Length: 354
Image (cartoon, rainbow, N blue to C red):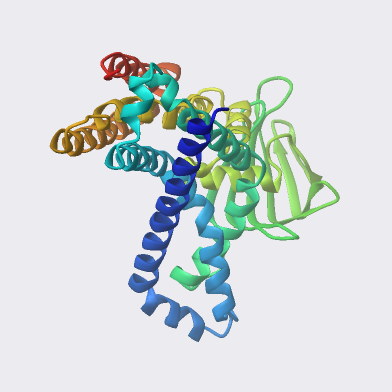
């Protein structure tokens, strides 16, 4: 790595940290100001026993979700800021005049972006599921003044077995109140498992007043287990309905094992597979417009690059909706924005000044 590469890399990373802190800090402060009354109400509920430390911990947990949501924007603005900074200091001209290709001068920015995207992707897979459970629990207490206990929850296990919980209480000892399981027996006839209450112990649901109802009659049951209907699967089903964009690829694969026709999960899975490419595509779209050696044209180029990237997120949102509704196949809905705007990025790079 040559001296100019290290200089561009330091400039980009500095911009990324500043822009990232600005994004996270701004949205955190705005939410705190908007939710101040709800915090006071939550702190006044004795049953919740919340303190100021819980509020601080909630917003600490909230930072990774904000970062993953805004990482492509942060990367794009940091890249545009780096180009504008070097243009303002007249530092691009001698490098390009010396014969270095523009794409080569941008290479440190793309290299750092690739590492950042890969790191965030690994973080999403390894840490985000645990953060998601803690975040949801605190969110319900702070903003709804209730414990996190999903009502009327449905989950689907392997082999098209469906579970309905009137109330599900996650935690160290998960509990279901009002358990119903719908399945087919070996002969293809309907059977049900009913229980007033079920507690997860020893790797299975321990049933209170459990009953198996089948074609030839009924029998008592004290213990029930089926693949895909463990407490983590119930939590996953809840998040698939309420916060699908926060699920990891492993969570989406688990949903598809129980429900292969889950179009939204399949569409989001394709999107997550290609997610590390999104910041690179946005940079490829935006940077060529920012690299102009006339001040006015440079500012117009930055605005044009930002508008193109905003268009990407509009198209991505529409494609996800079409995929979830079944109007498009999941692989096409999940990959079309990357393929389309990736092609535009390659065209944009071809028109850069050299």
